[in-house]
Length: 396
Image (cartoon, rainbow, N blue to C red):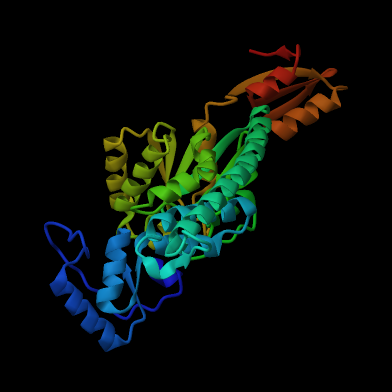
């Protein structure tokens, strides 16, 4: 799926099982011969390895087979580069690409060297390799400095959001689980929702109004994937901060996938890697309308979460059709601990139109009755709204 998302056409595949990887080529001489024959038979121009190759292994394989060789990390980096839209996302991709490229510059040999000039300097001078490394080191320094500025701005925005009693709910999940479709359904936004992997790379934050009428911030983040390269986790740490700072995670799972349980396991692994495994979760089994009996997938996912000591409730939805969305909003409302909601009955003078409007706009009003010069209201109101009511008489 990664290769197809990058625009490649799969001409064939080879699987090898062996006790130990070959240090020089990963797969060994016999498999190299088989692979070279297959490349010739199907006229392939690129070989993709579903693992990370060392620089030496990659060079040896290209020399032995006579074909371009890419590993899993390089393929993911290519996909990320194609998907990045914001300046921050582009910088993060470039940072990861340069960190990946640096150790792969070796092996060019004296052919890439430059001759020194002047007496006593004849012979190989500074090699192209050293020059390239110095250029990349300077570029890395500049990118890190620019990223620090972007992260500083993001930090200021986050502090401003935290100054208001608005909880942040982050969407997480395996790539292509339907997070962006769910995000659009919950927020009426128009974030790109595509079947391609990593269609959403840059984080997006929007307001959502819960049934109690309190507002929360919903953040759509990059999709996770198995064997996510460490260089990418490091490069995208600023983006993933939206996950680590969230009060609640909506862990979106493609319920129609036969690999749903393993995807949950991969996501839990990444959450642990970024320090967000302790955040409360709601397991959202998306695309439930495509599954006849989603209970088996839910049971497997719950077992994985229990093994990971993750506290989570479960709900089945369809982001495409809207099935279960209202119930999901209710579960979010009941799960969030920030700015807790409480049922109140309050007596307000009928002349206080602004206060009455406040309750209707920011609380869930169940009943309203006018008695003499007062209005008695029963509503679910958050703590921040209750504080704004001042000294108006509460009715027990």
